Image 1 (tube, rainbow, N blue to C red):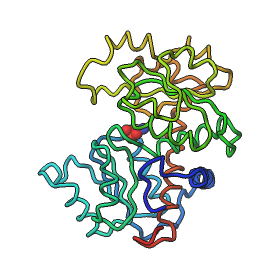
Image 2 (image 1 turned 180 degrees about the vertical axis):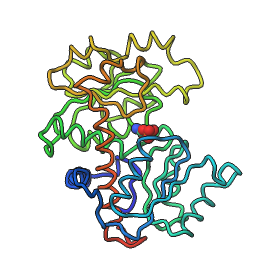
Image 3 (image 1 turned 90 degrees about the vertical axis):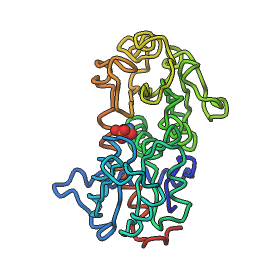
Image 4 (image 1 turned 30 degrees about the vertical axis):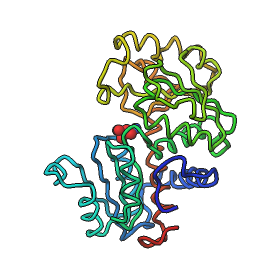
Length: 314
Ligand code: CP
């Protein structure tokens, strides 16, 4: 594997290898010296054309824990604001010797373009492209599910996950549905009809408009952020109406199985798709998801770059 562009690119064995490697690397976080020499001398670029807190920081921490040199590039404040193209930005990164480029971009497909246009020789990791995919988020979610629902390193086969909310604009939902299918879990997505994408019937999951029914037999519920910044029209009557019909609150949480868990990729709209008391409850693993993101991103960087010199990955 040379790039990580889509959750669909991962075979079950590759996905499990990333999860198992992340489990091993998680122990580094518990040490007083949180560093391994694995990627010493390698250069990792965080190329972010869209805002991020969790993904950008956790990739930076992950790369630094593996001793890589990290360059943080935000489109705001760079020559992109003067109109520089993705190609010329990529050629610049190639010229400075980037071994891996972690890209977040508003355009679906931008990471694929970067990986396959021949502009750069290193690995490309998709850190979220438009409404398309966010594969490392799906991996960290699977890692979190495994830790809570399977004694740490078990099989997710048969585990039931309900994903609720703005599926239409969610790259997290698509990557999760694809990866969970690869890992043998059963997924149901729940949304109002206006927030489901065209073609949802071809996704490998069940689809429902009824959150209450879909929660009753779920081992985990993943709440999605309502992505107001991507909405050019009214997709629901009001925030209150949305929250009443599709929000996770304490009353709904009580109807779920004992031991079931609550995930959210962040950032959260507290009081809209999730109530503050649920977000902060002992069933919520939302903060842990962020910590697990560091282990997963260490594993991805380690497996893509560890031991390979630039351009020699398979
Ligand atoms: N989950 C996620 O992608 O969060 P950020 O936008 O903060 O990176």
